[in-house]
Picture 1 (cartoon, helix red, strand yellow):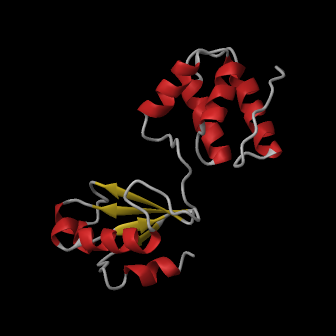
Picture 2 (picture 1 turned 90 degrees about the vertical axis):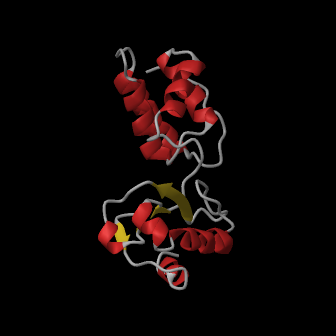
Length: 164
């Protein structure tokens, strides 16, 4: 086990650092392990802040640019904190025609959260997606695993209150 100095970060507890150490130890020396290490570390912390990526690069003896390059390339990695509830709103044709832009606007205005961002209290993250595969329910949004169809600007905030 390699001993590394742990950087201070408000979102990473000692227990999280211990788990990350275990992930690094498990994969150290394995070619092509960076995606697995980043994925597992993100599962522990919730996202990949710069100090965590630096720590991983030191632990795996890889250049920081390689670690950041992989993390910033793949959409499955988050470099900013996510909310406890991720709201995915469909902006495909059927949802667009049925008013999803006004739904997004209501969410953004209420929580001061533009698309692609997280609310200040980290309760919600708002993401636009091209299709959720539920055109018959348009306009559609998914919160976590819950699908909400026929969402209207007038009822979206009531739906979100259930998740606070």
